[in-house]
Length: 427
Length: 142
Image (cartoon, rainbow over all chains, first blue to last red):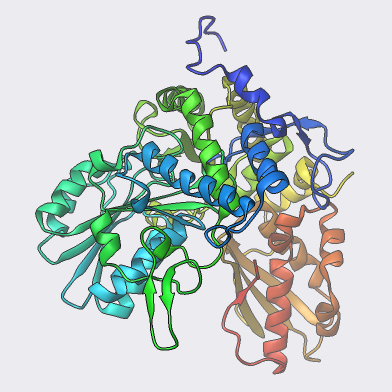
């Protein structure tokens, strides 16, 4: 690169990278045995963070500490370990509430992931409240997590499911949104940040619009909460969901935020232990929020680890996390647009989240991804769980590079070099 | 080399068959024709087969489709390989035969691209022979 003076990173990237030992591993060899082996010779360039992020030592240590020193089931033991685990697990709910601006733990339900949070509301609220006279508004850039869920709930209830158009720049057509949302709109489910286009949607404005018509708004925050400061009350979301594994946490933990009065009115989606207060052979009474929605042994280790992941991110500062990714996204956008035969989807580089989905003319995304893999560069290739959006873009698949706190300009240079290699191979 | 596949997957022969596919198109006097796809990749392949009068020997094969280099090159090479083979020999072909034909190691994630054309040809033959009768489009499993 010719530019000698580069803007300093908003984060101390070297210090951050030291927290993630996996970034030191090499790849390129035998894939049948997990972990680094003899044939692995190329440094890993991990640019698949929108699929899942890596886990810092601080979070891994928290999980290990839980299992080594106070592993126990929660809310059902008087013994000391159970009390310690219960307290830590409950505090994790408080920490999440504070992180996203919820009123308190009553509004924070732990789930398996974003998808389960979507299904929880679809089943507990949608199946009971929707009918043929209602409509559910989605966007054309919804992830399958919400798209398939509400599509199927629409079929079961007769509710009309409609989609806000995405314009040629990859942004929501807000005029179309104003046409679609009407007094029969019972629910609007909007993705906060598109995992394919990188578009940051005006969710607060959409919430206003839907609330004007007395509908509810569910914001899918899977790609926003890990990457930027989010305040669910500022957005005025009725429901909001995200996943732990995309934000330095482990797999198996997601969060459903819901306004307390809504969660109180809703019936449980899963029945069993933990979610009940009293049970007779004839009937049962539900436990208070949020436990009413956490049937069975919950995600204890994962919830406690999510607390640690939030601590980690807030130590970095969410503003800094966001600024770092913006810098990388703009850099990647600028470098990839040096090539006329590279097509990037979504808004321009200075107006997008930290991911770039693209194709190279004449190279299938899976071939591209294989060649990038040869360079040690991990990107996602496929439809990124937005198959209808890919159909609309008239492409079978795309490659997607997505960035996080530990990525560098040099890694993007490696990506660009690999893309250039693919171009030449297929020229 | 390891079974990671890699750049070695894109040797000259593969790229040549991808850029200049052999026997590409549709047959006029086709004995049987069958289509398949990899739903997760968007690869599609249609294989047209014309048999000789003995009803067993493959006289000519054409293919058409769209997809990644591995799936399309594999179809192109298979269309050459099958000519003169019997249906029995076609049905006996396994994954090793395909990787041997391609002459490169295919990474585990890409195997289904490599074997799509073979699967389509085999299902087409089975449909023709009445061994199966309820398959519209071959879909490789994920």
